Length: 182
Image (cartoon, rainbow, N blue to C red; front, side):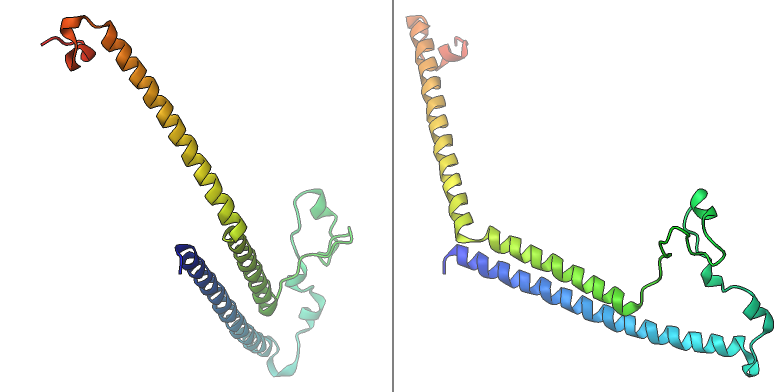
């Protein structure tokens, strides 16, 4: 196997690992949402049993609007435009809470979409066309850097030889280049 194939296998294994982790997170959140729903249902049943002793609802409870009907939707003119039930008159209903299953579904879908897009990007980045293009660009850059280095070396040699020619005959040598005479 070439090193490129090894990297491709490693990247695929990493992508598979990320997908498995995303699946486990989605399953755990789904189970947690089911437990929370069951707990909420049992709490609401106990609350209903406590509020209505002996099966007789209180007469004042029917006359009072429910506490959950009042929703603060804004400050100022928007709050004044709300009617008694708390719903805005503009025709837009107030936001309602979502249940645990829907939340888990949203989280799972978002995770799957992110994993799929990441996988697509990785697959595209590791495609043979992209690797060949990168290899070509690296070779071109290496050639350009080599040409530049050779040109700088030739220029430095020209300058060194010119300084050597200009130096007096008795001071020729490395000391003449530095300007120090021993």
